[in-house]
Length: 152
Image (cartoon, rainbow, N blue to C red):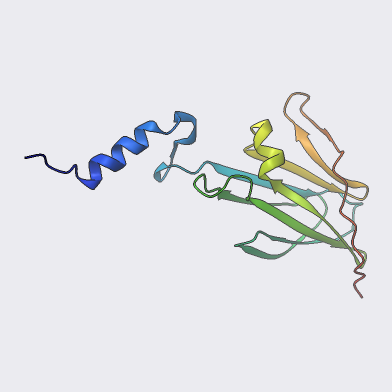
């Protein structure tokens, strides 16, 4: 008589079939979800307070205030079992009573570059991303998304 394999054996076989680059060892143990780190630094003119508010579909990271050259950071695991391309974090940036926003992490854009550490500087003309090849914040072609809101 043939016996049915246990659920543990089936799960182990499925894990062995996953590509090894999807499996990550973290300081807290084993995780199938790569950790993404996002850093944002206020590079507006000195004396300009930056208010930022970041969200995803599932998470609201709250409101934070940055003085010149201060940094806010967050990290997350994206879910490889959800339909890839859905991980998206956007932030609203407010200074001098005007709202600006853009996507600080977009799976479709950032995963193709293998970006797991995104370092942004927030400037008046737009956000700039750190270029690990040149060691400078010289990737500045994102711009802010149009916003009709004016804060008082």
